[in-house]
Image 1 (cartoon, rainbow, N blue to C red):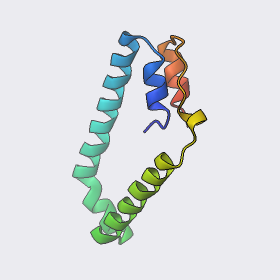
Image 2: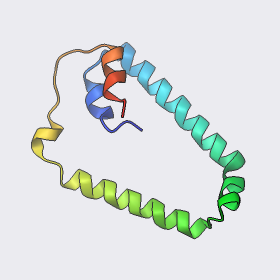
Image 3: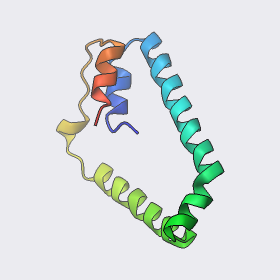
Image 4: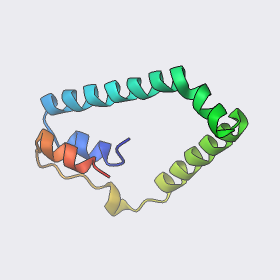
Length: 94
């Protein structure tokens, strides 16, 4: 997932926004489908139980929410300059 998605999304044209949305939807679907098909086998292989995954997921959600609540105003400013699809993809790289 791209942490700068909102900034990248607002800085590009409508065509680039549609391309980004399709890429994100496709990758998300692939990850969910793979998790559905082989997720249980992977968890069993590593000996991880479902409650452990639920607790870890809750901690990730809580940490993300805390970071969103504590971000400064300078971090949320958005440039109004029109960008290209390549600019948006560069912003999304880790």
